[in-house]
Amino acid sequence: MQVHILNQLKISLDKDDDLGKILKSKDFYFQKAQDALIKFQELPLSKDEESFLFNHKKDYQKLRYEFETNSKYKEVGNLIFEIISYCDYHARDKDKLNQYDDNRTLAKAYVRMHSWVEHLISFKLDKQSISSVSVDNAIRYLLDPINNFTILSENHRKQICKVLQKPYDPTKFNEYLVDYFNAIDIPVKHPYNKNWSSHCFVIK
Picture 1 (tube, rainbow, N blue to C red):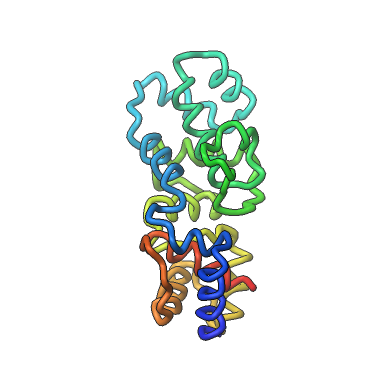
Picture 2 (picture 1 turned 90 degrees about the vertical axis):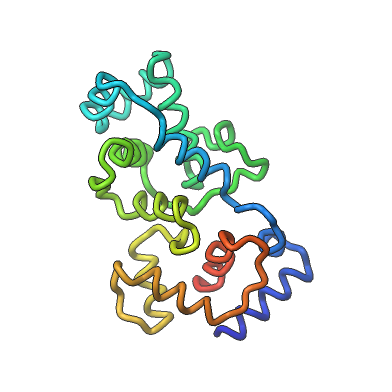
């Protein structure tokens, strides 16, 4: 399988198809997403703002209304929705908020908007309280793309472990794949793009 993957990567480089362009890119393929997440992470909030977000993090309609109409919450709301537009193919207003011409996203995450908003707020206020596996995996990838993958769904990860003939262990999944692809000399310009390009072939 590893030989097959390497051959397919070489074909993509020769054809200069979408994957070939990722392999040749000198920039991290999701740099804008990473920038938005870090900006969100570092955005200062007052105690009142933190309290409002915490108390209403499960009330999507209330939050959406305040994000759109209240200047006090406009910046944090815009960042939350921009981050989601990079993470999920089905994100609301992706065409408007995603700053890439091709509207690239991490995955078809099948996470509802209210869940994205709730767990991104949890990440902002208390990094230990993210209960959504898919949202947590997206955040981990954007913050550390060398050691994580854009395979967000736990079920998808279980299927990949079957392909690799490995027992599923969520604490070791990334380690399995990193070790697997380290054995392949993937011709990628930017190291952050290695796991994004390689996972395309694990799922085939």
